[in-house]
Image 1 (cartoon, rainbow, N blue to C red):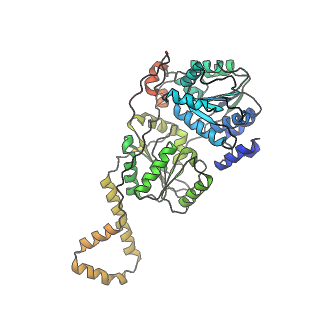
Image 2 (cartoon, helix red, strand yellow):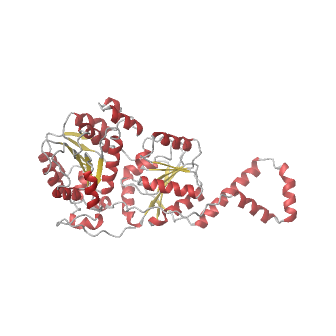
Image 3 (cartoon, one colour):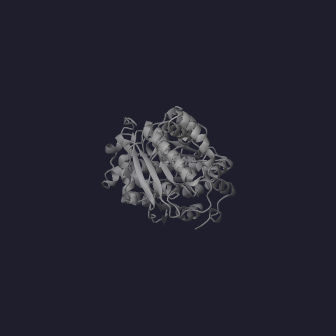
Length: 478
């Protein structure tokens, strides 16, 4: 496997990649970066979760003039979640270069976006409808665009954005570099490659087999607002030696970590905004057993090599099956078994079934554990500790004190007091976790029949635009 330092990458970007813990390039990165650095248009066929953002982000950053505070790079992505994620990763890669990416998407106040655009980001990552809006208003000027990227092009086709993509590409300079990434290559995407790209080089990465052996997989169907207490209850019952909790955003990681700490758990959080020193400190605590629960984003968890993880909790179900496999693969290592528990809101059940279908594995449904279950679980752990002490220790020196106690109290009261003293009582500190939108079910919907993704049908799921450019009403969120 190629290393990043073999791919003709500038020193400031290499420094950022090292800070992010990246050394070896994934296949899509190893093949795309040299082609794009030479100025070629590139068609990359690869699944989500294969490292596409760095594959197009690194050549784009290297081509852009950091002193020019105008939009020089455009990335078009199907969903706002992906737009935010891509912008965040580009900003991490470009942190020592003086180049900034901004995510622009529907559902956010236009005035706020216009103000942010006036600050002069060199890269804009946008959903198609909102990007066209800005182009028509001239609040995003595209005359300086040198690199255009279409990310997850087949998903944009499924969502009915194919005409928008054509309009966007026709509205930016012809003398540009175009990079297109898609898991599949339907004829409409191939047509864009033929008509709107210049002699593109093709990179095709075979999808990896997704295996999840040695891992018992469960899901708990639970509304968003009950997730945190359900996590607490499950941890109390099973008392994992080492657990990783995956959350979708940095804010969620911080809130869950602070909430767990407030309730008395030894928890630490890790995400892309942490300094390398803080990141290493957290990981060392985790490896040395001074932390029981690590809360992490997908990006921060990349490259983590921690043995002894017994439980993985998907506090937020991931967007794609590969991320799911990557997450739960943190447990069940070295021949040991592990448990993966996913918290799924009712609106995300279709997405859960898609993950099951793709990974060819079935998750078992669990009832949400109650606070009473958690108390019983903690007491059972104490009883087991007492039983082990009885089995292993010579208790002669304690017997006189025990006899004195039994003169004043009956045996049940004495044992109950001992169990009470040794049982870890959870603090009842109130904790509030900000809610997030449920994962889009679009992939599950489209998997039922190819070509079923017409714009008018799907808008109610995505809150996108209708033909007149007006926002459709969104469904109420969990």
